[in-house]
Image 1 (cartoon, helix red, strand yellow):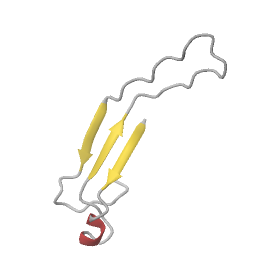
Image 2 (tube, helix red, strand yellow):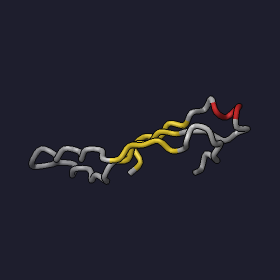
Image 3 (spheres, one colour):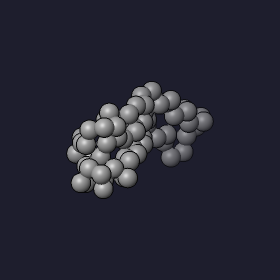
Length: 64
């Protein structure tokens, strides 16, 4: 599950609406606990995947 996505918007002017780089954070899917749990809810699983998209020099479409 995508938890965070940060696109370098300063690139929009340089790349005519495209971007050079974006940072992302993905985590495993997590089920919400029932409304009235009999036990404490399980902790949310830790995030496992982080990274950077783009090489910082090539303009990419933001949807990529």
